[in-house]
Image (cartoon, rainbow, N blue to C red; front, side, top):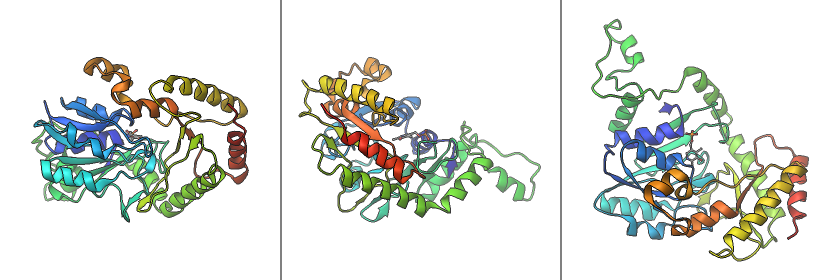
Amino acid sequence: MAVTSCTSALHLSLAASGFGEGDEAIVPAFTWISTANVVEHLGGKVVFCDIDLGTFNIDVTQIESKITERTKAILPVHLFGLPVDMDPILDLALQYNLIVVEDAACGFGSKYKGKHVGTFGDTGCFSFHPRKAITTGEGGMVTTNDSKLADKICRLRDHGAAMSDLQRHLGARPYLLSDHPDAGYNQRMTDLQGSLGSAQMDRADDIVFERSRIAEKYDNAFANLDWLKTPPNKVGYAHGYQSYACLFEPEVINENSVSRINGIRNSWMDKLQKDGVSTRPATHAVHMLSYYKDKYGIKPTDFPNSYAADHCSLSLPLFHGMKEDEQDFVIDKVLKFQL
Ligand SMILES: *Cc1c(COP(=O)(O)O)cnc(C)c1O
């Protein structure tokens, strides 16, 4: 189902599953803020879980300890396109009767054990924002195997109407308006955006292949750098490379060194920018952003790996159409880094 954004996809998934006031959702502390915001929008409580610094994904070994009587959902995030280890999450969901909403915003083309991400949970949520592998300007998509949930999502994205406009126009009495059993939302993707997206879908394999080709060249170029941890290549995990997120580790990362490394990373990013190479922190640690920090009274060190990822990560340029000499230029600048 096409929607206005991945944020809408996440929101509709939870709303359609009956997630609401007082319910708890487990969310990795290192992700884009909207994974957590949708929980807040529905009156729920965000329960953060730390990540594994080797993958930037939720640390699946810590999830069970976060489960309470109020827990209703887990939102695993396939961050930067690296699939989450879904098996233990699905086991927990079965055991504790939890909804699994996959944040696959970055997961276009990513596969876990041979299957596309976004097909494991109750729903999968994709983004077509300009930063993502395919884009409709703004846009998103929900995938699900559950036809009841699909119907509910379709109705909620369309003001809660019992019947879509198309069903009405094709029906016996197209001139009569639909009933609205729910107070829904307007989170429909426009036809114009849909046509942009479907044209790119025709080239999906090329787009995914090109991203992995560029990533592989970086992997080889940086294989011997012990201070730059490139994305892991693990058997059974096909990375979609929405971005090429690295861990900058010029010295061992711990509570005492994080700020110092952050200072070095920032001056390096500054230098790279002046040299013509744009880099970004991979994403932010949501528990450190004012809204969550203040509302839940969280300290950065409550989720030490997310804190470290926030302060010590770096994404290198990777985009469809990146030319050989452009990538060589980036590689050369990175290899010239000196402490
Ligand atoms: C981009 C992104 C989102 C938000 O997607 P929108 O389409 O901009 O709403 C959510 N989660 C993650 C992990 C993202 O990278």
